[in-house]
Image 1 (cartoon, rainbow over the protein chains, first blue to last red):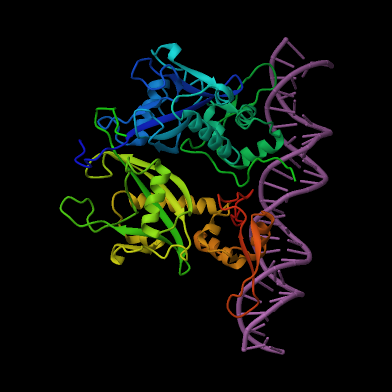
Image 2: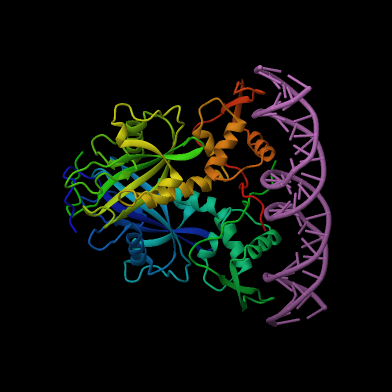
Length: 238
Length: 238
DNA sequence: GTAATAGTGTCTTTGAGACACTATATG
DNA sequence: CATATAGTGTCTCAAAGACACTATTAC
């Protein structure tokens, strides 16, 4: 379907995805390397995966984000949420552009990285290190910062970290996912009470882990979205 | 600055704004009537104010939203927050389009409606009535529903309703703004404790209101954004 | 004084934080 | 048995809900 209007100049329309996973006890984000070339903006820079909306293939923005996610990770149904949009005359040297940004949570088990792409052009990176030192293409540094902020904020009062784990997972594993995202320890007893009383987990039987008492395994009762807790995790202060 | 790329078809890029105010004890939204005409989509329908991004006038999406808000209400610095974006091949019969949606909170005192526009083409409408019975143009009904949901959600744990009032306002007035948005009564004592202990209000002296004991007037210490409370307002249940 | 609204005190409850305790597996 | 990790019990505290109470104005 070709547009009949408007006739005046329009911005370019893109979709980018911030894909998060927990790797080696740290929050990681998937980045792709931009092509080298005389007419390429930010050649060789790392960037969030994304690109132009394809008006012939993408029925809507959400479908476009899922397509880009599947192209990089093979994951079909992760947790996917719209983060916001960034648009300006200057964010891309080629002219006015606007990107619709999503953020996704996947487990490393379900997302063993690209399938066929050049390994040097895509990879998982520690979020803290990227934010601290790696200049990303376009305004992707600012976008990544906003995505991490949104994630950390929502983790304070939702069950979002469960989407970073493979099922079945254990409560100690879920607690560790919370601690990795929040960057601080969480009390075990309160954590368990909170998770179990929120009634979003289903027992799947004990799963052996290592060499000691086997923990109970759980899966999500409903994978369509996180549960919202009545209070935040904020530790006491004053 | 004209775009040099891409050469393939691109979606149209728009910005729409859901502008809220409290009027006659009800949450209202500002709507504009679409033009009549053979080539106009949804002729004569009510819609959220908005339209195409002007790549020559708008430096970024936020500036575009402020421009559209000022054109309809004259308000220069309201509370403005990005809601999200909606894009698909079918939402506009003219073809693929994507709109970046903002929501704004204004006081009726500061926004006496249009300045010069035809009064029959713009107006305040009760949100509940619009959602219940008035079919809006495009997907604006769905967008309005999302905006109200976001507003109601955030009002549970932030000081957002203060942006619906003219300064100075009183605590009973602020409480009423909360009750209007939430659609339920709020306990006075707990409300006052919560507001005053959050330390975001500055006393401005008593303001006479009607015929009885004059309440204290307040203004916001910081108008750049709402304060976040540690818990929601949710009433007890089970 | 009365009426009306502004503002406070007090009791209860929920659920988090801290942390010591018990339980159950492997070797 | 020792060890390690899983899981529980108990005390305290912050802040919300419910609701009865007092305070201050106009008339």
